[in-house]
Amino acid sequence: MTFSPSSGYPTHRPRRLRSHPKLRDLVREERLTVDDLIYPLFVYHGKNLRREIASMPGQFQLSLDRLGEAVGEVAELGIPSVLLFGIPEHKDATGSGASHDSGIVQEAVRLIKKQFPDLLVITDVCFCEYTDHGHCGPLVERGGRLDVDNDATLPLLAQQSVSHARAGADVIAPSGMMDGMVQAIRSGLDAAGFTHVPILAYAAKFASAYYGPFRDAAESAPSFGDRRTYQMDPANGDEALREVALDLAEGADLVMVKPALAYMDVVRRVKDTFGVPVAAYNVSGEYAMIKAAAAKGWIDERRIVLETLTGFKRAGTDMIITYHALDVARWLRNA
Ligand code: PBG
Ligand code: ZN
Image (cartoon, rainbow, N blue to C red; front, side, top):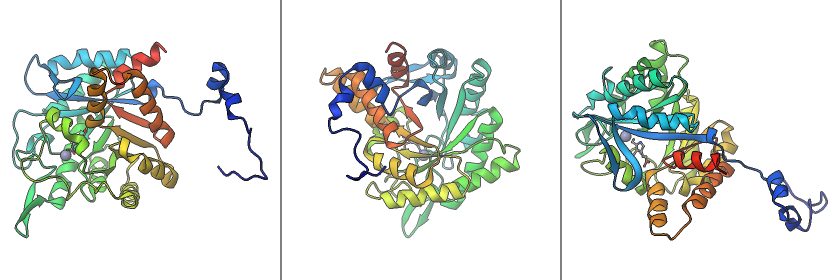
């Protein structure tokens, strides 16, 4: 959009268009709807478990036998999609449990697809919940330091993705920020006959302190060091565009920016530069901040959440992964 004095402005009195509620409705540019929402779920090993996550009030670790009731609520509210994370009983150095056909996520996908065939099931593909060291792939020692072995992780990511697709996952979402991960997964899926399964790449994922509460929920905190050798430096916006360009070139169908709040400029630049579907992940720390302030009565939770998510849309997001999804769906229904 360009403005110049000669082309004129719509009005010198912008308040005219704010003067009547129906007029405000007519000129509103963005609309948050239930169709924008993706709800993350934590599937936990064991039985009869529905444990609230202390730093994420209202969010739960759920065992398979308690998953159906939660997903039923999602479906009933008209939320189109869920994103699944699994917390397995056994962890090892390579995260081998992540690719078992009877693994926690694979079982969860089967259960959801059977009970709620219309729901879109997205699976997070990574190893941090499955490795005993909590990093996003197997480790290698380089120059006296342990680091995730990028190229050893790639075939494992392909295996994990194929096992998710075999279980019925509709979309595969790799979150580990390994170089070449999208290509490896695309080739693996294609070779196994899953050419129709799209990839939602965590393309611009920053090394963020906002993931703190999630790591409690998914029990995936690294046992040493941090993720800065694979996740991005929060200072780098140009680099985010290069990451997105690479993932698209490797075959990503959808791209994600994560976290959302502090990175809305990145969302906008990705949208303007590539014109592809963009997801924003409204992460655990963003959720926790709002819940904590709301619990103290310092903010109006409903208005803050709706304003925040509308802001994501204005920045150029097509879909929003958010722990607020159930509340938002209820609020929009009763609006
Ligand atoms: C794991 C993963 C993380 C999140 C999604 N997938 C955490 C991490 O990188 O440590 C964070 C989600 C959130 O904070 O809500 N690869
Ligand atoms: Zn990970």
